[in-house]
Image (tube, rainbow, N blue to C red; front, side, top):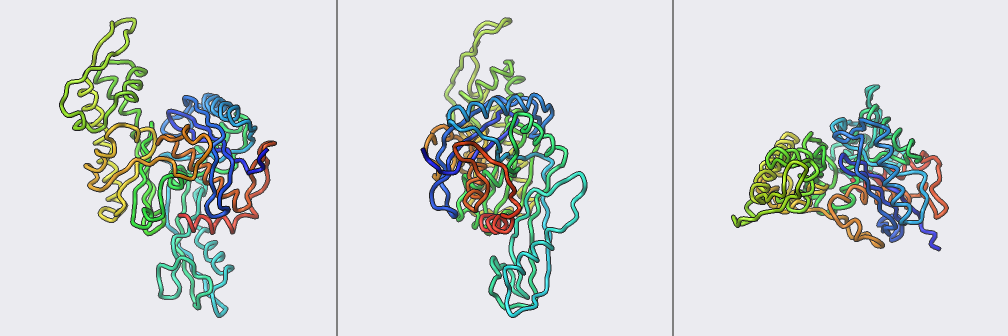
Length: 418
């Protein structure tokens, strides 16, 4: 029986709740590998645009997904890494400045300047989720990544602070707890997804990670190796499904099934050849045949609108023309045929669909789709924390414990990776 650490992750999306259980191995602590042991999925009830709207329904979805994952993995989990996203997420930059009294900068000086930057007042209705050092300035020299050992009289840092709404976070934690689990840590979903699909070169050159979810579309911009911008748009796959309901005259269920089986986001790919799709009979209508070209046209129009809003988000953030690595698409919407072609056309840059990174083994075929990017990223995040000495589970189950003693090492890890 293996003694490898066990990580459990949970992605509560607007459409589906996904749980993943994996063991941690590989080159610890720098490059941990995940062996997928179990995956569970349930249709989400009680969430609207990434925010819990019904705790009891959300609890049932969590319990069902976790039960399925644990049964397959043969592991009983107690605490989880849980993703969070939505329009309530905010990010800001904060600076900190300290004087250096010794001959050279010590690690204690770096910690001190980080604490100063992190001490920005947070409103009572919000809580700090991540504090990520961006870069340091040593006297007049900018763009320093690790100032330890440098001679200086003044050290300055720029810190990227991510905050979330206290109420959405509280309701999410409560849903997980009512399902019978502890929240090991809430993690911003774009940060988790970045671990799963982005490489260091892309983050250095400049890349936008676009998560096409059911209720929202989240945008995270990386440049010069660091996360620079986070945004969320209140449009996603549910809007596409709704358009198909009205445009094709089908039920919500049939629209969803048709979209997954025959959907195409770029109507030019169909080549103008007439194709018809059989729609099952209902109580009021007999069997019908619908034009796939019409369906593609409807999807194309909505996705074009979403990508246009993404282009405005990138421009407003100040990164138009600066993303030399283009965009990477994840989430359930990234599975649509032609979605990368449409994104490249509308955004005017290269686009690819992101699949979970190669650091997976075991039942990896179960998560080899864009919609599993976040949950695999959450597990990778947990794996890194475990590699740094964090609390993980063994075959006997997950354990509790404080992570305060890991604060310094985790700060350094966040700085290294984001």
